[in-house]
Image (cartoon, rainbow over all chains, first blue to last red; front, side, top):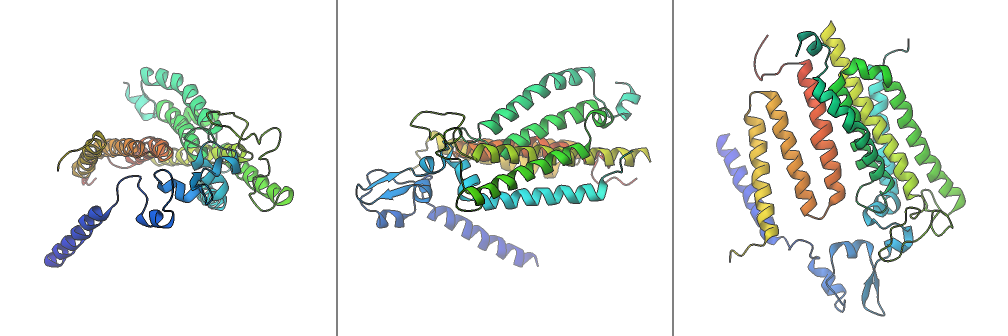
Length: 110
Length: 161
Length: 88
């Protein structure tokens, strides 16, 4: 059993180091973005690929989130606008948890 | 510290004074983070966690018995449900006034829908995003405070038996 | 080969301190000290998120991990036993 655990540990360590070796630099896009948009003017980051709009005529990236939602914080515009259903589900999870706790431990009013 | 005070769950006078000073400041910071959720980093969940930690500070410093007289877990639960109700009602308004559920129907409107230019940060921008931020903030403040308050009450009752 | 920027040095230092405080949290027999070590790990994790350009997650981690979790665990320890492994 100990031998098996050691083999599993070595395999896991190999995959960990392999993924760390293959990982791109912090903030850099995956290489297929460069292949898809070869004439982009400046360095494309990961956020631009998700939220920005690629203008095919000028070859530049435009930030579409500020005009579409009117919020400066792009993270909030993703959380509450683009992925609003996800936030609604999170709120439902919180509500269910509180309802269960109140049912279990809530006391009667005097 | 006297043994009787320790049994009541209180802490020393120094901790109580500092907690009383820090409680309004933490609440103000929580409201700031919630209100500026669409402009600066932060939002409903983060500000709600800060506000709930302010309530937890009071519970730890003054003991559950003292806090329970001012605010009950039923009140927190009602507050939390109110936040969820505001969230769903605003989302359903998007269904009727605009295209779909959770649609941002207030953007480009005169009052709340101002689109910020480069370097500007007006508070009345973002459409329905500030309202949803406030709703989620109410949910998180009420929910986390209720959980910690109920946990402290249960552990107190277990000690008394 | 080993030219490191300030960013990489900070990341390596933070990782070492985080692993150290996590090991300390397991190693202590006093559960109260263990909870404090866990809070230190959570605070370092929020600093890590901040230097990785994710301030939203950093605020949430600092609020929930370093304050609320610590308070809940300390209330639980107060209701049960402080030392690990002593039988009453």
